[in-house]
Length: 239
Image (cartoon, rainbow, N blue to C red):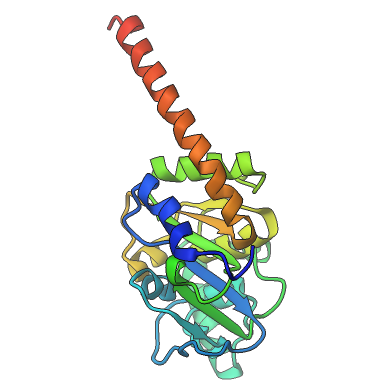
């Protein structure tokens, strides 16, 4: 995968056939700020809030301190919090433990980045200023199924069961395991506005082109099998 790939064309190869309502999000982890890209200014309550901004068309980068408001997101991105923010993390985790949202022994097993990123670039896929590390798709289950099947055909993972909470662990999981699906979590749905009828698929950027190629085959195959199943339903269903 090279930065010269036409990202807008690649985005269209997913958005149009899958009838995606939201634009795919390109996320790139870097060691240094890239030239010509706006640095994020302001605050957001969570790391996945940046997904919402990117899906709306913004292109920008964040630094570790921009993620300090999200204890869970900072953990999955391997971002150490400043000493003054560590107490907030403990309070957030105690709330989650107290209401039974997550068990303390589950935390060490959550996927997280192997290395702390100094910079994270967010953009809609079609406007990506450089090659993405991971591309996030929000899709209805039918479209997510097609993406998953395309990933398996392309040899880009896709065989893991859907991930649960937190949604942000889908990014490090995709980098480690290949394409993964995520059912989303309640915090993510509040912060991003993703509907109850949507879920996520995270595709490694390096695999994106071959997954797009496999998708065209999967779409044709599913169309043929849909007609086959409908014919059998009409012929064999007697109830």
